[in-house]
Image (tube, helix red, strand yellow):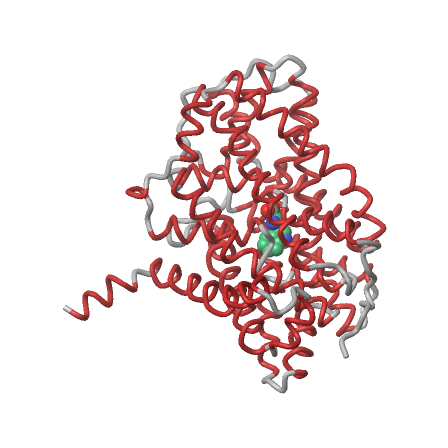
Length: 460
Ligand code: TRP
């Protein structure tokens, strides 16, 4: 019989879970990463593939993660071990949990550095640095921040400390309350920004860029990145949503909750695109700005807007909060595991995990300036970690979660936990999780390493 509560605590109700999971999903991935990835890979076709991946791969895997977490009621490693044992399968399935913990560790190390940028931008905004700034000025402000290791270190350290603080206190009493207020505020502000951007920016060109797919420009790497973006943005593939599911009451519906979370997440990403690209085109900028995109483009709009100082400060404060509510979900699996296996108390576990992540983060931030000459595959350390985690480790984790949920876990367990009945909805989920998701991930992987052309080469 499955456990009904977790030793780490429980969400007070269904809304708390939705807010926490949406808080995890909505973050820098939507507002920082999505626009620059779309800009890098040519817009429309990337956006379309991304949305397809959310619907056909992300949604069923999100349901699977919540289901596994709730069934196991432990950290992802121990959940996977317990469920494999229940099914009489090999304990090696717990490797999914181990891989996830490492992936979360790697992601958080660079995530915290970028979140540090948002903190620095709060101060920039509040001190009026963006008033009447032009593209060259915004470029200079960004360059001055990223080129300065000491400043990056300062903000990265503050952000990591904030994460440790919340996770040490336990999720329910810390973030649950903040998220309730802040996520709606971020949403409202984003909508205001879109309205401003629509009325003053080059909306037609932006809409054409984001929504008219040009498949001629779609490379195998672009498809891989669109899938990676879906995993990253939905917080899937490493056990974050799994552990959040382990704190969810047994009577909550997994399907409808997943639909809400994924829907909100995609909506925020699209809104972010609609806020940024009209301004970008109106100022004659190119979409291929790389990771600095949002930080170089939005200040220009805020600088011209009446009340821009207030709006821009507010925006970066809220963006920081969005990053915060995401970052804690990256730390939580590690902390829960330390508590379960090494008998740490929560405070020490959070401090230890946070310190280790912080150290790797220092390497990330140095790769932007002092060590920018050191590259592998043409990428610095931070970019490399970003690429490796989002485009390879998360989809691989997702693939294994899908295979486990569809092929290893018995049908009665998944049917019971998802509670969709034996009707078409359950059968649709099962088809997606057994065939569509694993095969799609495998094909996209194979394509991106050039397997088809290799095979064609052998054949003839
Ligand atoms: N989804 C978050 C964002 O979009 C980042 C994030 C939080 C994440 N938890 C995760 C990404 C787990 C991958 C896996 O900003």
